[in-house]
Amino acid sequence: MSISLRLPTLLALLALSLPALPVTAAETPSSRQIEVQASASIDVLPDRATLNAVLVEATPLVEMGSERNGDDTAKAREKLEKRSTAVINALRKMGIDSDHLHAGNLSVYNEQQLQGDDQAAPLRERVIVQRNLDIDINDLTALPGIIDALFANGIDRLEGIRYDVSDREGVEDKALKQALARAHQKAELMAGALSVTLGDVERIQETRSPVFRPMMMATARSEQADSATYTPGTISVDAGVLVNWSIDASSAKTN
Image 1 (cartoon, rainbow, N blue to C red):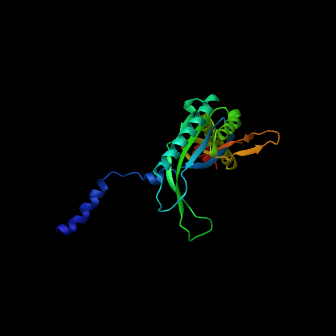
Image 2: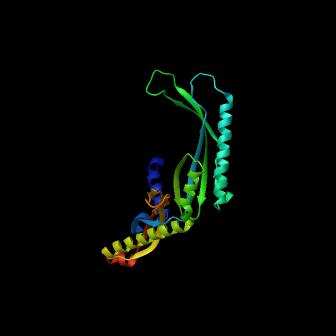
Image 3: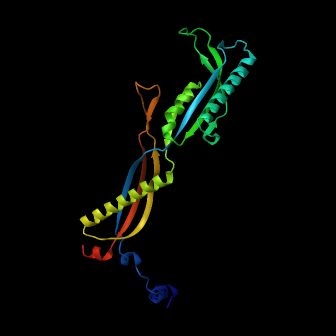
């Protein structure tokens, strides 16, 4: 018998001698799950704030290209330093300690201006010296008085008020728990509508980490008072989750 005739027979005998492998894909039941997305938003009252006050000094305006007095910038800087010191000392007298006062570095830059409406006239320029001062306030009832003191001591403008809460982690945890509770509620509702029973939690994922959403500051001035009253409103905190529950096998077989 030739080799070419014996080869198919040998291959057939070899195939019969190999162990049979289970077809796992066909025998494994498909995973049956309920997937739920849920979110929660809670509103909390702020209990602290940060003010950003700005002090500015400027050199005299000169035409671009003309000679400047080299002492003008130094004088503007010296004047700004004295004003900053006066504001800080006034705040310290009100009981605000150094840990809650943050004086930023001096910012020096050129500013250009038109000479009225004459577009053909040479531009004028000057040097601006600026310093920002952040004030942390843990007692919001003191806020109006502190703002009045800032303007009384010569700040040029108030950039804004940033409201916050002391226990950020506690508020974030509360929002996350509410999102998880809502996810469980939705999953139970879906399982009940389909006449199945929830099994174990298979996967939990944050779809949105708890985020503090900024709110606008509302202000109002009373006609009977010189100082303004400030109504901060509330801070909204959002959280989102994605949760997968398995469907109980016994309930799944009956449906």
